[in-house]
Length: 127
Image 1 (cartoon, rainbow, N blue to C red):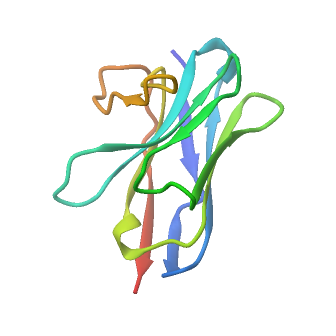
Image 2: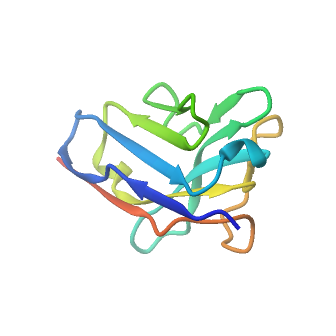
């Protein structure tokens, strides 16, 4: 089972940017998809973005469309989430996970039982 480590979170003012990284102990090429999820206090975990390993297709959810971008480093061991124009409602713990989303059907599986999950990185956006 792959070990995932998220990084890049922090505090930023509204309108600012952050880039999150998800590093894998193995290669992400071994998995069908890699997704970013987030969980705000008192709310359920939700999908944010998804990357297909085979064809590099991506999907981002409506809540972040036009502001967030998911990509993979050429070494296939790191997945990025570029977050621009951040809003206070983006404040959450962000997680990456393997095989927990599906680009073609725009489906996310935010339950920890699917795939491998990292420990998360906190993103705080102040108004």
